Structures are given as C-alpha cells and as structure tokens.
Image 1 (cartoon, rainbow, N blue to C red):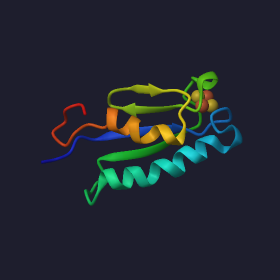
Image 2 (image 1 turned 180 degrees about the vertical axis):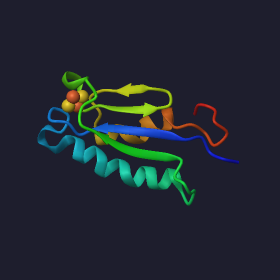
Image 3 (image 1 turned 60 degrees about the vertical axis):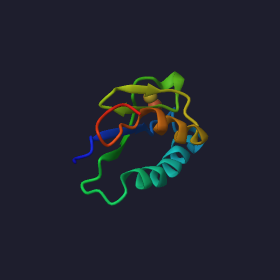
Length: 95
Ligand code: FES
C-alpha cells in the first residue's frame, strides 16, 4: 500500500526565526519525521522550508499539507502532538 504523501512547510523567515526558534523547530522535527517515514522511499512526509508564510505576527509558523493546517506559535515541545493529530494514517485516513 502506498502511504499518503504529506508536506510540512516550516517558516524560517525573519520573524519566525527570531532567536533561532525556527531552527529549533527544524532540529526537533527532523528526527520525528525520520521516525514517521521509516524506510519508505520516496519519503511520504517531506519537510520544506519557506522564507515567509504570511502569518509573521503569529510565528513561528508551519503548515501541514495536503490538509492546509496552519500552526502558529509552534514550540519544539508541541511537535509530537501536532504530528499525532495531523499526520495521515497509512490508509490515508486522518489520525
Ligand atoms: S516570517 Fe514566518 S510567516 Fe513571515
């Protein structure tokens, strides 16, 4: 069974990365996505970096596609719960 494709876009723009907080999100997110992707190739969950997601005042921000879930004021500690709630199950159903 082919797993559903998803994309997580993390803003690393000027506001979201104040005090390197977007970098901290990326650092925490990468191993979580590695674990979620497992050995599947191509990786079903792709990590992308944006320069701005046009929600600067609410940053740090990330968006999870294809659902288009916009997450504001993300902290590294929030990531496991965010992934639990928004990553699709292997059959494509919402988690
Ligand atoms: S700098 Fe992140 S939304 Fe604009």
